[in-house]
Image 1 (cartoon, rainbow, N blue to C red):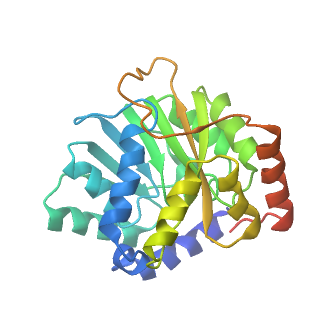
Image 2 (cartoon, rainbow, N blue to C red):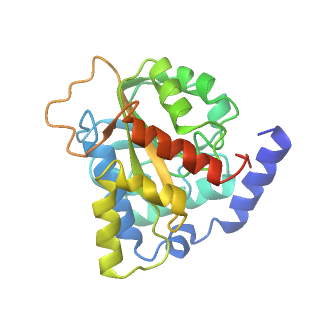
Amino acid sequence: MTGDIKSFTAGQFDAQASGWTEGMYSDPEAEMRRRAHFVLNWGAPLRPGDRVLELGCGDGSLSCFLARRGLRVTGIDISPGMVEEARRRARSEGVEAEFRVGDVDGLAADEPFDAAVSFMGAFFMYADDPRAALARLSASVTKKVLLDWNHRSSCTPQEAARITEGAGFCRVEWRPWFLPVEAVPGAQARARAWLEERPLLSLLPFILRRWRYAIYFKGEKPSAATDGGTKVFGNALPGSAAQRALMRYGLVTRGKRRRI
């Protein structure tokens, strides 16, 4: 995104910062618990005291959730309003977490982090140059990255996987992520959870468009210890021919990819 578009985007989020999480999710605590489970257990495990960098931290709901579990968290967001809300949340919850205004394209972490994570569409959608941004991050990340892709991203899922590998991360895996915003019946929630664990069937909503849908990528540094980790199921890359065909078809049926 150009500077003007980024400034416009920051202003949009500034205006929505107050009460963002509570207005977005029907059960914010459950959503943050779900995200934290992935952060802690997919690939190399994270332990209390580990450092986490959250890209696109929004109003700090996930960062504060992780901080309550003993992680040392730094969150960055392009929106000053969101960063101020994140700081307010940390004070209100009595947790220690650092929040900064920052742009993933200009980010040069000057301190080591065990993990860098993105759950707010902040990486493959908002980064002007995901390859360069991830290469810069790679120098400071010691264990793993968890990065989100959606249909407004500037690259395909296959390209996102190659970018992650090219930045020096191995054991790259993908998995779907259904994005619950409003409350859904228990049976539908269980169906979503069941589908997420099945790499071929989970791609059907990618085509049918019935649920909001994203893909997450996990990449680990070669030196990262995996003992006690990988409690979250990920799909191998490049995947089966059927999986690759469904991804390609899903992109075609959604029309021309666009950026915001």
